[in-house]
Length: 313
Image (cartoon, rainbow, N blue to C red):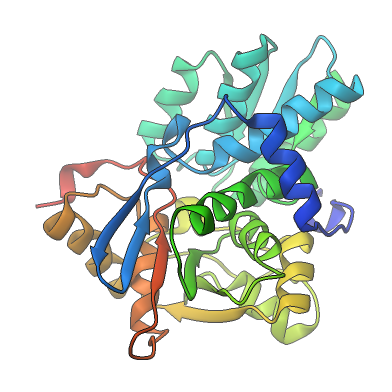
C-alpha cells in the first residue's frame, strides 16, 4: 500500500518560494485583505482560482514539470480530498494536458462536480485520502502520468508559500493563523516567513492532529482522522516538508474542537458574509486556542470556499 511515507523527504527555502512566485505570476490572483478589526485581518484566499489556495501550488508544480520535460501524453494525476484535485485539474487545463483525479467516495458532491466541469477524469475510491492516494499511485505506475502530491512536493508547498509574500507586502502582522491538514499551506507560509519576526500558528482539528502528533513523535506518523473538517483537513499523516519546516522554525501548534470550527464558520458568514469551508474556518477557530496578546495583530488565512452553503443560516 502506498502512503504519504513513500514521498521523498524534502524541505523548502524562501528562495524556492520566490522562484514559485516568478513562475506563476500573472496566472493566479493576488487575493485581497479584509480588515475585520484593528488587530484582525483576513487574507481572502478563497477568492483564488478553483476556490482555494491550492491553485498556487498546483500551477507551480505543473509548470515546473513542463519545464523539466516531465509531462507526457498521460498528463497529470493526483489524489485529493477535493481542493488539491480541483487545483491540479485547473492547472492541467491551463496548459492543455489531461488530468485524472482520485478522491474518496465521500468527497463533497460540489467538489466532484467542479472536477468534472474542469474536464478531469474523476475516480472515487475508499473513504479516506490515503485510499485515494494508493489508487492514484498504482494508476500512475500504469500510465506514466506525472504525480502531483496534494501537499508534500516542494513545488506544491512553495506555491502555497507565495500567499505569505503578498500578505507581508500588503500589511503588517505579528501572527498568522493557518489551517493544517497535510501541512502544505502552513509549511509554505512558515518557510516564506522564516527570516522574519512573524509568528506562524498551525491550527488543526482535535480529530485530525497530524502535524501536532508528528512534532511530538519526532517525525510524521499515521493518526486517526475524522471530524467536521475531514474533507480538507483529513490527511492521515503530515507531510515531511511541513514537518521539516515546522521543526526548524519553531512553529506554534494549536488544536481546535469541531464545535469551535462550526461556530467560526457560522460567524464568518454572520459577521462578514464570508462563505468558508470547514477547513478554512478552522484557522479562524484557532483564536479559541491561541490567545493573542493585547495589541498583537493577527492575520487569518481563509484558504477555501468549496462548500455547500445551505447550512449557513
